[in-house]
Image 1 (cartoon, one colour):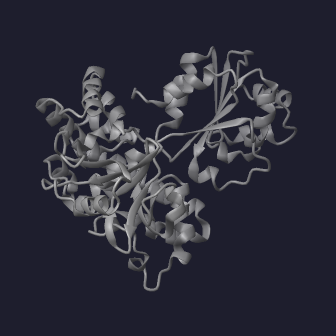
Image 2: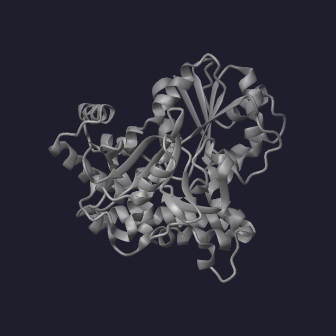
Image 3: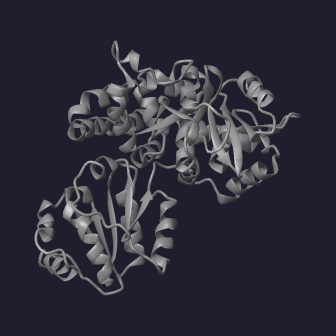
Length: 433
């Protein structure tokens, strides 16, 4: 069983005196159901799981009156239970398939006898009509693929190793050489395996990477099926954007160019399809900001953006040119460093850091800028050996003295502090930002 950070959040929710229903949302196959199931069985005397897609008959329990007594009676008559007051967790899985159940959450929470967790894919949650959302009676919690620290747990790396590495980060001191080499090796494995639980389990269980790649392709196929199912009139555009992400990120200028999809393509024509993928949680926008000042959102140009995949393993699988072996052997410069940059972007999202890049009139493009410690910090991702060369960062620093809290270069090297204040961090230290 993979150890997931979300279990700590679920325990915090259970112990909260102001507990309402919890909606766990995220892209398909990131581990929502498994995590809630593990939590419910460990922390409640009675755990009741209702999957509205697997058991469509259960939707009828919500066809009539939506008061708590009627719903509990209906579910009990269908064989669900026991309902033990104060000791029962009811888990509504794939709740997007039963909009009335989402509406009923308000009345179930008001009843107060049992705890409720809902779960569903973002695709369904964002595209199903709900007559009345349970505002004030529902807390939402986002879930993502495994981050690198969770991947280390899966590899049975001890907490002492992680703590030693974090102390090096906090004190800006190099990680012991052997430990650094091992962590970079594990990070390269993470780049190609990614954090989708099914793929991680396959990677750990098989020396043959083709089994991991098979899981990746199954997941990608299910995402394409979801696009066809939910995207309606936008499905062809959404699929074209989705399939183009690796190619677009593999260019030197990683900005997503719609004109490469079709002649005369415009942001207006593709905006809904592109946002659709973002709302589904399977692609992340990184918008251009034209001013190095807070708040960054005030200077955003929403027609200029990069698109990243939610998972680095899926990204590698989409490239279809066998880059996995090259990454494992240490060549992370491949595809203009796209794999490394996508990995960093996905890790930042998991740490609730909004994605922005800086570029003003095609000058001094900086990979990521973000609010940090009350100010502004910048990240440059360098995948090659020449990571001490970063003209854009140097020029931005010279033109904007006193603006940056931290100037971070993520690279394959060990921790290093330059005389001008630029700090070089190993790529795996994204987990501590």
